[in-house]
Image (cartoon, rainbow, N blue to C red; front, side):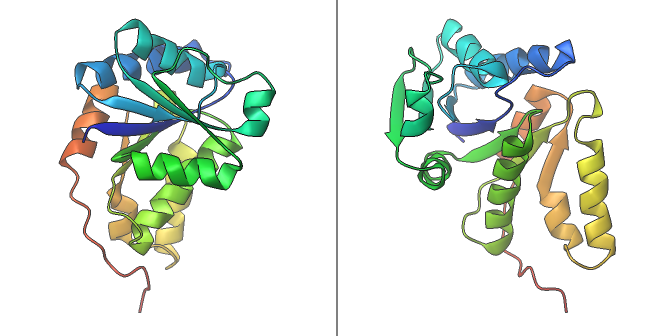
Length: 189
């Protein structure tokens, strides 16, 4: 795995642990000799991850819709910045460029992004690993909800288990690198 996409908040959140985790993930990405793929912004946890990767000499590829670039939230110092027309194009290009995906804490956009690529794995549209960096239990309730989906017969347990949830950046990156995704039909019979 050489390119990892990171989804995270365009705000910092209230817990200082979120920023610390963003910096730790940036360090782990650079130490693993990976390139960061992300949404192109300069704000919040997104900006923090990128700034730290760049400060450490890493490479960052951003993908941002023109509307957000025009709002002056585009990062100005990236290795590469792709400006696209729509959010759909942004997500498609990020997914194409990435070998795996990680979600840090964030808002509804972060949730939507990780769930979408996780769904694509489940449907067999790609075989790239998906992971969540669960900082201070931020994603515990999501995991509980997904477990409830599985118990209720709407999500195979094998698919649930393929979403890697870890608390340490280096442990998560190792798990992503070692994850072997094999397609299994999503339909429960």
